[in-house]
Amino acid sequence: MPQRERGCLVAIEGIDGSGKSTQAALLARALGAVLTRAPGGTDLGRALRSLLLDQDRTLVGARAEALLMVADRAQHVEEVIEPALSSGRSVVSDRFSGSTLAYQGYGRGLDVEALASLVRWATGGLDADRYVLLDVPVEVTTARRADGSDRLEALGAAFQLRVADGFRALAGADPDRWTVVDGTGSVEAVHAAVLAAAGVW
Ligand code: ADP
Image (cartoon, rainbow, N blue to C red; front, side, top):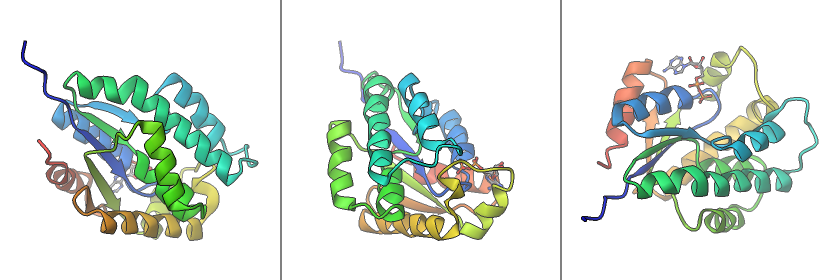
């Protein structure tokens, strides 16, 4: 029997309110791909997500937060992403390892190289084939998120700005894997740009 071709993993990244979940869903539908998200793409991940993002949980240290995010990544890869890819399905993930580097590294100030090696260990070296960064100014995302925020979203504009700069730095350092898309247009216009950017098929 011929070997089934491996699927591709596309991650949609950006700060909160940049339109990731909207665009991840549209992209997955357009590609017939598995739609998932991080944190929270598995049963364990959903429990970790609530530990990580519930607003009333203010005492999560930066290193504990990073380890919980990375635990989510390990489970997500093992349980959802790797099985889909190896069965030939493509996967669209609303956030992936770029977010760990941007939030826990650039946002929280943890060592980015140390985080990158922790993430590599957790994923067994699996990374997204393509990262699409939705670039939207913090003022615009703040207005879009007027209806409430989680523990990380509530950290304020200075934190979101560090994360946004971190994403741009990651994209700039690895232009073969990352594509930056202007996320300020209409949902349809951004979708067309994301589809083009994800063009690994
Ligand atoms: P994220 O997953 O990055 O937090 P969402 O996809 O949940 O972002 O979008 C955040 C909010 O902004 C939602 O209310 C959504 O309907 C709205 N939104 C998403 N994309 C756009 C867009 N291109 N223009 C205007 N509003 C948008």
